[in-house]
Structures are given as structure tokens and as C-alpha cells.
Length: 174
Image (cartoon, rainbow, N blue to C red; front, side, top):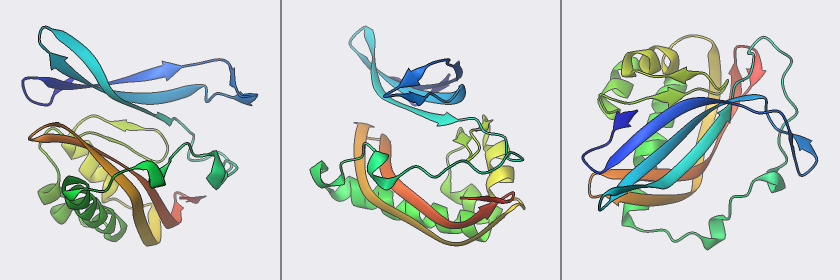
């Protein structure tokens, strides 16, 4: 659990599942992240996401069809906070592509965490900086589009978006 101020917290945890969803096998292991916000005396869920844990040495998985995403960009309102956070996110993706640890350090919070493309949870800023600026990835271009920001407080926000990259990491297509 990582506090995000007095009235918001992030919790990360591993999930193990054995089952199907719409006839498709659910990934057997994932990292999950949830944000909870306090309303009065009660905590309430505000955001949840999951990233499958995969073996980087395994054969590349079949790409997900674009229409399989449940992302509805046309229904999202673009506002000033969304534009501001998306601009920062685009800079972070470019810095990752260029493997610039010093710039990435200046763009991320001291208590930042990261889940990489293989579903590996990096629980400290030092681990995240090492992973996101290390060797193993050759990326030509990155893109962040269809964004929506949800502000949980004046200083805490969540940005959801569609991200893509042209390149490979540890032999697998990003």
C-alpha cells in the first residue's frame, strides 16, 4: 500500500485466476493496482487495472485485436487536466524510448511504482528507473492517444489512455 495523500491510497497485489471470460482463458497470473479514496469515514474504490505476468523468454503472445479493447475514446471528454497529464505522459514515453534515467527521475514521484510490459511489478522508484532506462528494448516510436484524466484530489490524478510502441523488448514485439 502506498499513500497518495491523506484521502487516497494505492494498493498493488498479485492475482491468480483459473477460468474463462467470454470463452477466452483468463491470464493465470497478473499484477493488479487499485486506488481507493476516503469519503468521510469509508474507503471506496476509485480505479483498478491489471497487467498479465508473462515470461519474456516465452514465444510472443498473439496480439490482441484492436476491437477487443473496451476503450471508448469517443465517449471521453477531453479537458485541461487531461491535456496536461497526457503531455507529461508523452514526454515520459519518449524518455523511456531514449532510455534516459536522469530525465525519467525528474519526471516521476519519489514513491512511484511501475508494472512493465511483462507484468513485473517494480515497487520502488529505483527499481522502476533501472527497468525503464536499462538495456533490452529497442523502440523506434511511441504514441499515447485517447486519454481521459480522473482527478481524485487537487494533487492526485489517474490518466487512462491507449499507448503503443513500435519496437521490441527482450526479443518480443512491444
